[in-house]
Amino acid sequence: MLASIPSLGENKVTSRYFFDLPVYRLSAEQYYAERDAYIKRIIFRTGTPEEPDPQQREKTTPRINDAFRNHLTEKYGGWEFNEIIGYIRLHFLGSQIRGEYFAVDRKRIVRTRTKTFEYKTLKLAPEIDIAQPCGRGEVLGAIQQYIQACKAELPQRFIDTSNFDKLAPHIDWGNLYQDHA
Image (cartoon, rainbow, N blue to C red):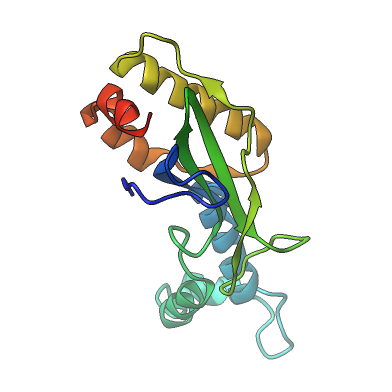
């Protein structure tokens, strides 16, 4: 995730990205709640004349639907990689922090397993200037402020900052910024 590869559409000398933040269709909690509701709806659909109450069948034989439930869980998929609908590519440009946005090209974003990411915009949120003189705290503060602005730009989406938050305290942001200046 940390890299020094030129960003699309920018001057290759002055702008380099340093972190990609995944953007999800919805949070993991919402995804798994939807999955559980889907499985329950399929397993316990309205009874048939042969079996009027599927829930009663599971009460009398608790493990009867385990194989079917496992099949539906696998078919539905997992959240971590399947529900990504875009990326925010963070980079420095002069004294600013910016984030290019790449997202799926769809009018309506639903659960899917096939997607192509397209370049959407040079900066998702207005750029944030890094206060001078800058050190570790000023650079990290500007990056965090920019990420919050991106969250405001995508209110119905979930921006996963968990990996960034784990790594941020261990990075010398002042030196990283100076390397890109």
